[in-house]
Length: 401
Image 1: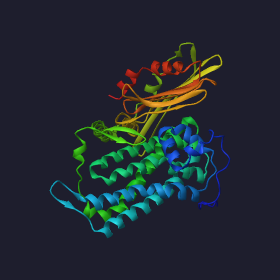
Image 2: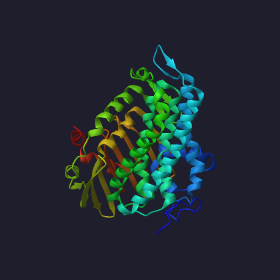
Image 3: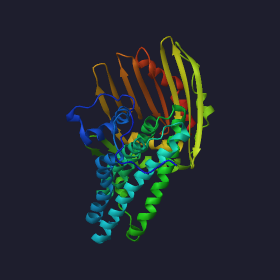
Image 4: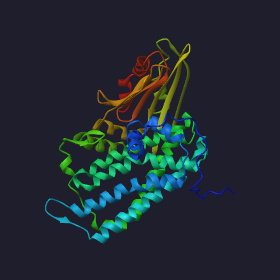
C-alpha cells in the first residue's frame, strides 16, 4: 500500500523550465503577491518549476497569509462590534480571540485537505500525483481570498471580500498546469476541485459557527450599495455600485446551467481568413451542481497556427463579472513584447505578445461567464484579436440570456 502521509521535506520533481527569475527588488512575498494577482499565467509557470516542500510552503506562504482574514475579522469585531445604527454589541475579548483562532486553524487544515483532494483526483483526469505541486495549487490559488479578508476590519467594507473569489480564476489557471492535466480535462478537473473547496468551506463554517453564531449580527453593508469607488493600493479602484450588482448576479447564477457543448462548437468558424480549421472538439461536465462546457478549434496557415476556444463556466464563471467592478489594469514591457490586462468596452481583456517569436494570446470575458480566447503563432496580435471577434461577441452574449 502506498504511504499517503505528507512528506514535509521532499521537494517536487523537476518541471518544465519556468520564466526567468525576478530581480531581488521584485522578489519576496510582496513581489509574488503582485504577480500572482496581475500576471497569473506567467507566475504559475514560475511556480511550476520551483523546487519546494509542503512544510516550506506552509511556513513561507500559508501560515502568514491565512492569518489575514482571522486577524482582520478579530480587529473589526473589537473596534466596531455587531450592530445597527442604534445598537452595537461588542463581544468579550475571549470570545473574539477564540473564534479567530479556531477559524485560523481550520483554514490551515482546510488548505492541506484541499491539497490532498487535488492530489487524489489528478489521475482521474489524466494528471500526475504530486503532493508538493498540489499544495502549491491550494496555497497560491487562495492568495486573493486571504488578501480580501483585510476588508473585514471595517464592517461597511466587508462586502469587498467578494474580491477573494478571484482565487477561483487563479485555481482555473494553475491547477491543470501544475498537476499536468491535458487541456481537454482541465475544465472538469477544475470544476470538481471548486466543488470540493465549497464543501470544505461549508464544513469550516459548521465548525466555527457554534462559537460565533450567538453573537452574529448584521453590519451596515447598505452604506456601500449607493455607489462610489474605493481605491486599493497596488490594484486599482473598485466601483461599489457595480460590485453590488455583481453580487446580485452571482446569487442569480447559482442555478445557471452550462450551455451545451454543441452550441459553443457552432460558434467556431470554418476558417479565420487564410487560416483553415483542421480540428474541432467540445466537452461538457457537471459535478456537484457546478457545470461547465467548452469548444475548441485549431486553425493552420502554413507554419502559423491558432487555437480558438470558447468556455462557459456557468455558475462558477459568474465570478468573472468581478472584473467590471475591480478596475484592474496591468502592463509589462519586455525587450521583444508586452503583456497587459484591463477593461475594454466593459469586458475584462488580456493580451500577450512576443514580437520575436510571434507567439501571443488574446482573451475576452463575455457576459460574466464566457471566456473567448485565441493563442498561437501568427504574424501579429491582430490575427488573434480577429479570431476572437470571428466567434461573434453578440452571439456569445445571446447564449447567456
